[in-house]
Image (cartoon, rainbow, N blue to C red; front, top):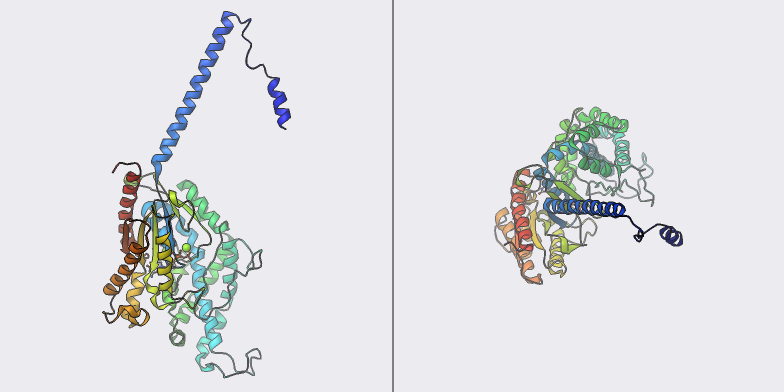
Length: 463
Ligand SMILES: Nc1nc2c(ncn2[C@@H]2O[C@H](COP(=O)(O)OP(=O)(O)OP(=O)(O)O)[C@@H](O)[C@H]2O)c(=O)[nH]1
Ligand SMILES: [Mg+2]
């Protein structure tokens, strides 16, 4: 290949022989050379202008970190809503099947739980192992009827998973996407990168607003069928959630379904309505857990930041030097919970360990940290319901079991760790947050924008 290229190069009359050049020919050659130089300079100027424009457009890079379910993707959605509300609004439609899947999974979870609690007497169900009969009385005739009527939702769950992930209910590696039944938690939705759903989202972000709306209105017949099924079963779903023995059963099993991610059972009529269009708060509550690192670009739509590009990484670790800010999320409500992946580890302990290791990381020493102590609302409702913080965090002693002193205490612990483990002095901007409260989060994002600006100015020695 190289030999061929060499041969063809030597065949070219270059450099041009000038020995027997006439005056006209020399003039023409000089003119051509001048013209070539002019074009070359123009191209270089354009390239430089483009480089400067891109540089000016770059508003900052943010890395979101924190344990699973701490609220990273929810904060990302808040950034989208704050900086690019029009694009967010147009994207809302895409979340409808996710919200429906969240709802269906909650229903199927309750049905499974009811069935496992109210097993049929042994002679009617040979599969039930021998042993003490479980609460067969908890399955009232009404509940039994509801579980039968809602049985088609199992198929709806499988269908929605297939549609959203663009694959069969079992993926190539044989890993079941319909997760095994967990008796304490409604299952999460895990959609890998490159799925139909993600692709659709990407298309929405990149296209102009006009073409986005036409994409948004296209819906597959399968999704429509799933929606019709949900609309038809709407009253039964409501009845299931309102059913007294269901509520008692959840209470006895100590399952606070309404505090779990992707909870829509209190909005059934609206969410299953034929014309349901997700509102921003629905999108914020819709739950899909993130797999692998994701890069999101948000183009600010108005204000002094108009046209600026924000790049937000949902998970990170690499290229840390080029990151301006890390937002670390710790869910304060986790003090009485354990990790789904290791039930021996308390969630708060895990958050603190993660925070300590991030703070002490030398590669991240020059990055400014923003700390979100999140899920303030859930912390408040837990404390108000009588759960004693000191029962789980003994060092809290006998201080009041109230939101303010508890969150202040947690904040102090996080600040102390940051101070003690950071390789060198750096600023920490900390906030108590409720990421599903868009107004409050929007105010915080405005403050963070200032922090980013200062950081960028400092980088170019302007402050
Ligand atoms: N009530 C309440 N719910 C929240 C808050 N922040 C996040 N959530 C909910 O918590 C769930 C988990 O949030 P995500 O943003 O998906 O969590 P994540 O950190 O991205 O989780 P992974 O992708 O699994 O690492 C979602 O259903 C959110 O709606 C909060 O401050 N209050
Ligand atoms: Mg996430």
